[in-house]
Length: 317
Image (cartoon, rainbow, N blue to C red; front, top):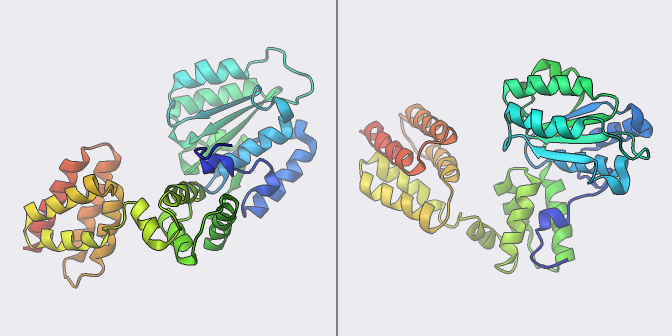
């Protein structure tokens, strides 16, 4: 493999037994796979980066063998989440058209299924019923409550737990040894802290940090655009003091020069609030939450964050 190959793919487990932690889930799945023809439709829920998609791909390999790519359809439902995706892509793939008798069924993996529209989910329900004899579905969702009840009831549901700091650090340590990268404990802990239990994110961050040399805390912060996080507290104080132009200039510098994301800026701003001795804490937190929501629904980040700073100035008065 080339050095430029993404480590998150290079070190993705290919067998169920290699999936990090998730022992209860993997044990139950192995029992189900003892008789593959009777495997039910599956639904995996849990936070990002805990192994849901990896587990689904491991099942595809173990059940379908060398033909797994040919007889597996993997879709990210957040990219194509409407009813047309279900009718055109899923229905076309799932229909019976004569396949290798050595495989028990075709497999459809729907990642981020909780982002599918209600109409698409309803259409999918009918397809699942019509193709049950020769097709199995694995639906993956961060928030299972967004999946309609008729779909949930047709699946065996498995809930993936958040990975512990020890699990992630041990896995990162193994990668460092295989890639012959120098590291220290504080650097790996910083990767875990920044990724918030997301294995995929932590591996991507590890690869980015490796380009700077040793994996230590300073390099992790630099590669993550966090080297200037201390400035967020200063921006908060400037905004509350009514110095809007200064606060905005520093915010723009953090985001455009140092690469801090808008969501990270709000996250660190929220943390800095608790370090202040102020009677207006509840108002400040409410404002941050309001503008965080506006960013999530697609509003212009620079305009919204500037408006937030202006609102903080009013609160400071």
